[in-house]
Length: 78
Image (tube, rainbow, N blue to C red; front, side, top):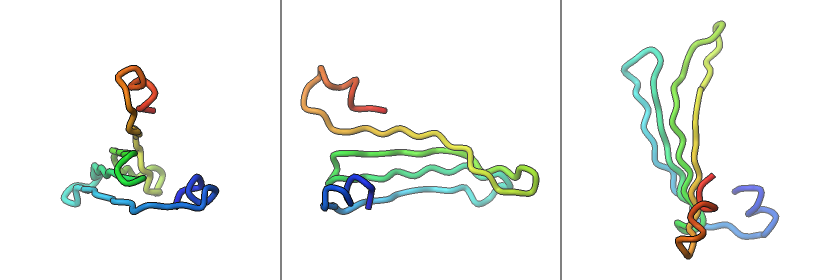
């Protein structure tokens, strides 16, 4: 559950789908999380590197939330 769901006292099913390349030394990966009964989708992509003996994930993400009009579309993605 997210902090928002805990504070509001509600939660909905969460779907997680992902892929990781396990055939290379520094694999790329990506995964998507669908939340709020499909009203919000967050996607991550990145790569794992070994930095000073420690595994580090370098990632980027985007979150898109459903909006009701074309005028709101700029607010839908962060």
